[in-house]
Image 1 (cartoon, rainbow, N blue to C red):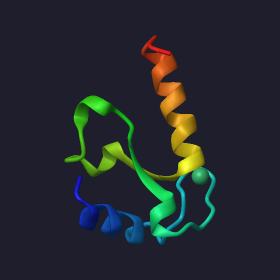
Image 2: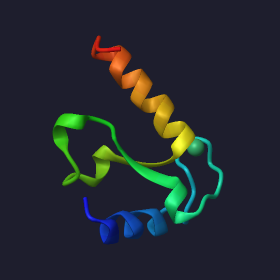
Image 3: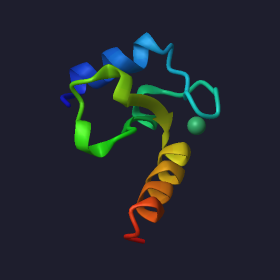
Amino acid sequence: MNNEKRILLIRFHDNICEQCLKKFKDKDLQIHKLNPDLGYSNHRNLKVVCSACHDMYSAADRKARGIQ
Ligand SMILES: [Zn+2]
């Protein structure tokens, strides 16, 4: 996903993390893929989250996939 699309999606969510519902700056928000296999094309697969929540999601993902 290019930066322009990332910013659009973040703005669409009013710069609010979908997980902790706090407001962040563009650079502090990330796009998380709910299902990594689906990629960025399906918007329902995407979640706008802050860095802290993204770390939590990534750790949970790794655990669920038995990688950790
Ligand atoms: Zn958050």
